[in-house]
Length: 108
Image 1 (spheres, rainbow, N blue to C red):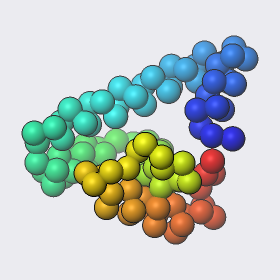
Image 2: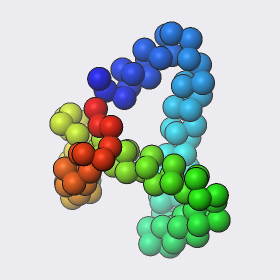
Image 3: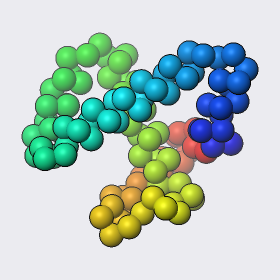
Image 4: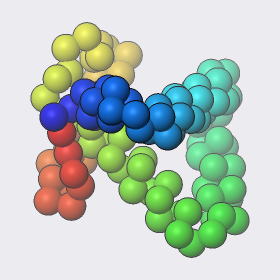
């Protein structure tokens, strides 16, 4: 089952906290995209790393697993409409990451 179908199912069954978490994830993606739009990728990555190292070890682990899960999902079978020349190499890297982590992540 895809992550979005799971989200919809949980939300319909009264798990409103799932919807809030989903929306928080969307806002985090928007904030990172906004920083990268016109910013320098390597500098932003270093800032992200510095900020992450200041978080509690448990939260560091949660961020890492959430990022790995996200990247692996981007490399999933349903790539229609999400890939063109602008992101082709990044998505191919996600496909490779998905293959490498298939036994370690709960992938859809």
